[in-house]
Amino acid sequence: MESTHRQLWERCQQIFRDNIPAEQFDAWFKPVVSLGFEHNRLTVGVPSPFFVEQLEERYIKLIGSTLRRVYGDQVKLFYQFNQVGNEPSSAVSMSSSNPSAAVSRRTGISANPFQPQVQPQIDSQLNPRYTFENYCGSMSNKIARSIGEAIGKNPKCKTFNPLFIFGPTGVGKTHLIQAIGIRLKETDPQARVLYVTARLFESQYTAAVSATPSRINEFISFYQSIDALIIDDIQDLIGKKPGTQNAFFHIFNHLQQNSKQIILSSDCAPSQMEGLEARLLSRFKWGMTAELERPDYSLRKEVLTQKAQQDGLSIPDDILDYIAQNVTDSIRELEGIVVSLMAHATVLGQDVTMDLARNVIANAVRISRRQINFEMIAQAVSTFYEIEPDQLFTKSRKREISDARQMVMYLAKKHAKMPTTAIGTRISRTHATVIHACKNIEGRLAHESKLQADIAAIETALHS
Image 1 (cartoon, rainbow, N blue to C red):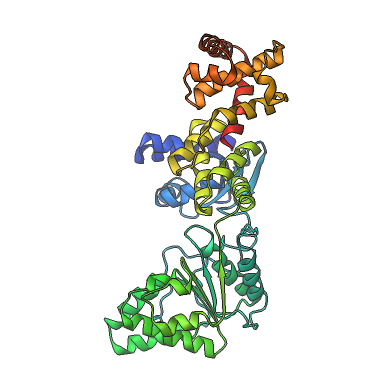
Image 2 (cartoon, rainbow, N blue to C red):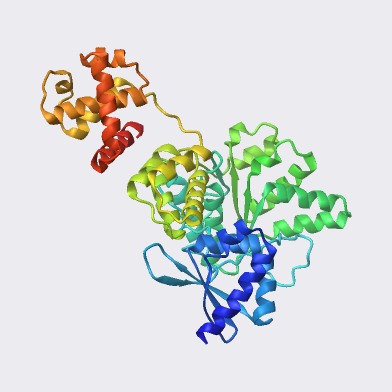
């Protein structure tokens, strides 16, 4: 039986090989192995949840047709993934560590205001991964998160209605407002909660206007029946036709007057939304306005740690620190860095190193690098070797001081780009002495692993 399920999977692998480029097969299918096939249940082992997401997003049609062809129409696919350094742990189509069971996502389907509602239930369009449990918190989002949790816990309390969340791109607005919607569904499964983007709202209204007057009435009636309306990127209504803004105004008023919860997100504060009708802006200010600031260091570090754990990626703490210190603009960028590290480490079959992290970050974001000067190098070297900085400039020939002095000369030439004569002047030595020191360090680097580690540690301190 063992050989049978492996032979069947090999047939699948051959079909995958024949239908996609070799590099794609090597990256996404070659690492997948069959763990068993019983009672129409096929279990395959994959390196991480990241692989599951990529396989299902990129190749779901190919996988489905291939499995039905090899195993039959009743086959069901299950995944097990390996956390780095651990035995496989079970996961079925896992894409998040804490998905919510209160909502289910139907890919490719948008809420339709024109479809007759036989049942009061609607597709909330909430992503089950965007829960409070998966939402990292810090001082930069504490107020907004606390308000969101209060709304989700007690839907009848309308102190924060409407709730207007604003902040720059990539700071977690979409995650937070959807987490509120999910908590509302968990608190009251019968609640009609709906998440839409402002662009989708506009396109649905435009479709209604181009149809018949009755369609416009259906559109308005549908949205007025919602218990909690969550609209993302409300700034996209700026400059739109008066009819769209007018329709939203009437829906907003109806929901507000009937004590229904309204949650909006924007990349700017209401006071900056020029081009939106004044009566809408005034209503946005009725309730609570909360800002999501750019992620602080503690939040960036927590996001990186959580994302790495979810993807089964082992990242040393010093590398997490380096990423958190250099990728500062958005949570989305941080998650993208982890995905890139995962892809590189998996495809290349190597551990995550500081050099790999630097290369990935250099290709993804612009790092504001401070200018390294002689004083910074002297301080970093003296700190590392635990000597007083003034000792570097003495005539002492003690081995530890002499080695530290040569290290300063070498690093000053390498990182501060100083001429040897200038280095000699600063350290009270001739340029010939500086040249000799640099050549000595370079020669020793080829065979002294401790010296290599020392320089790497000092350079990390200089760049931090």
